[in-house]
Length: 416
Ligand SMILES: Cc1cc2nc3c(=O)[nH]c(=O)nc-3n(C[C@H](O)[C@H](O)[C@H](O)COP(=O)(O)OP(=O)(O)OC[C@H]3O[C@@H](n4cnc5c(N)ncnc54)[C@H](O)[C@@H]3O)c2cc1C
Image (cartoon, rainbow, N blue to C red; front, top):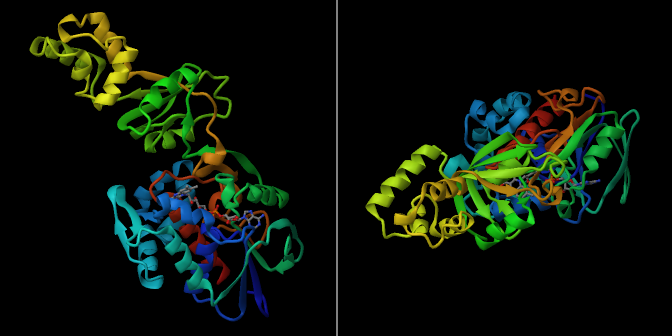
């Protein structure tokens, strides 16, 4: 470690920057080290306050080897950091150091008992306040590597020995994350993998919107598959929520990262299968049985065995069997309805909008970052974390836990 006071600059006071300040304090920050957070907006952790629909889904209580499966291609890269600071460690840190009790909900998702992301942000800010200097409304304009780092901001110039680049991705720009990380990293010699939306809603074409808007607000469990240029390229199972603009909900948000930016040229569509546990033949057999047992029942009523009745009504309309009674349900009608139940095709109007995405896919190339410390392998003394990196996790607390584990790795490395 350098003689005299070591000056550490954290660029961006979002989740990753704040967690780093927390970890530095917890790991034993002493008077030889001076930490400064430079934040572009007037408040710290704006995006953090929106997380978990305002309740902050802070982590997902899985073992590290299970957890890494939620990080897509970045699972192996982040595994050492997740092992070093696991979801269990995050729970301990929140409860014992921050004094915020957590509770577990479905799918191992952890939330604060107070159900308030604002309270999480405020508690973190208060925890670091005696050890860390925070400067808001200090937009970093440029960074130059000299003997340390010269940082030029709207609130003057700063010099740091060590720099933590944590100014986020490009999603939800109103929170301050407008992709600046990528410009700074590439200016310092890093490669930035092309960015696109992940965990985003999907706008469907005009014809398909008739269907989704009629069901706006209805949520159904389904298997959603993405088709590009006529071939299936990805699928995801879970809740699908219909909306005026198209589709959202966990299964769709998950699939969105796979939608290429040139999806319009690829005539892309999403296929929904409302009965993934049954084949087309099984459904047809069941329909035949129902015809025998309930000849005077409307077909749309019979189909509500598989989907909520509002969805059944719309699917029946698409299959043109709305007013049909079971006794008149022909083989051709059955095929048409089965197609809607198992192969509902909704055309994609455009690639998901990054402004509405919860996270950014792409970012600083992971091969250029040491996975044990998050230090750049190109620029000594530069650490890169959070959404600035080419990491995006599934929903359920994976992205904040990724920030927390990375923050721990950085802090351990800085404190030697
Ligand atoms: C609506 C929503 C809900 C979410 N819910 C969850 C959830 O429940 N659980 C979960 O795990 N994840 C969730 N996420 C994802 C999670 O919030 C992000 O992955 C996480 O905040 C990324 O942290 P970060 O520090 O890298 O970026 P950010 O939190 O975006 O912080 C970056 C900070 O850098 C600042 N900045 C940018 N440019 C500059 C500059 N030039 N100079 C100075 N400062 C700058 C920004 O103003 C910002 O404050 C959600 C995201 C959204 C949008």
